[in-house]
Image (cartoon, rainbow over all chains, first blue to last red; front, side, top):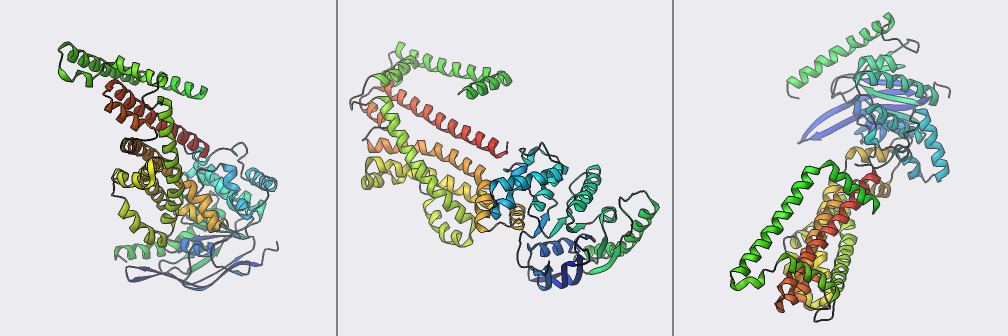
Length: 264
Length: 273
């Protein structure tokens, strides 16, 4: 991949929710390009619409206006060229690890031996060897999300959309999974759009951080993170970038607070 | 069978206090029965024949397996007749209630069309249909339909409930993995609904046994344990009547036991327990 081709393209994205005869503008004139092979974090106060952006790209949520395309194809409905990793894992509890990972392949009608070869490859990639025949219920949160990532990747999607994927994990597991994600990312060279509300996580992972405004959600600022990987959270460089991002975000947090207090 | 024995042994070892108290409760029950029958006999009270000793009932129970009754049938024939009706009624109810429940639960159109009809029939006790159904459909098909009505509604309503509770997140996940409508139906909604279906089946089988006894008593043809109880009452052979009642209890326990075993295996296979 040549790395400067645009993969995800959003232009003038608009999203309006209707709630009891009231219109809530969740996104307004949202513009963003994500290049091929890039890892971009969407960061913003809660309720700013970052998950909505991701769900629209995934095709799980209809847009009210604007244009969204992935790999040059206009998005209409969910499809296997956009893999999604959910915060709550969303694994099928009645399927084993292997069967969860094979879901997308099964739906595509891939023949059994090829299916098994593909799922084995991704089981290896996310380090789940030995757990192939275990059901999700018996796995820890971190391992469940490894299955979630492998399942999304097994379809070989053009982009990976991750909705606060490590939000339900404890702090240690979260740090480990962030390192694992970077390893998997460099092995697969996927384009990743990653939603988070953690500044620390965004600075650790991202090529670029997109800070969103409070409702209606817009791009407030795009901050490139020039720190070479592997990044050290305790390095002065990391801490200063982190401070920079936090200060950009802070005014938006204050706006959200004001919105909430006014009962909007 | 070996695993069942192991299961029982394990249960006894883990819950010996419960097992002991349960055994004690049975001893007290049969002791009280024995004492009461003995009291009736000793005092020569008029209705003692209606209340045979537990031993007499046990004897009648065993005898009914070897000595044919006046219609020339053994207890095994009656059991087979009842089981056949339960099986047919159950199969019919399952085959219709499962797809109907999946449809009504999944599609608002199906719900709007189906629910008014379902709501009309639901409050009617299956037993209310016995006279007319037996006249119209005869003595094999009639009780089968009654059993069908008893099992149909618990299965239907539990399946609808299960479909309505399908985790929307799993539907999202399936869609993003490329699942089309039929995949979502068979690979997400159906497996998610299975535990609800099993609950419906267990409740339905309990009701099914009540229905079959009543229908066979009214029908009075072609054998069946309900028929047996009624016929033995007409003969004034009350120890045999109690034997028939005991047989119903045993068959009821066995069918729900089988359903529970199936459920347990299914859940283990599905990784849900």
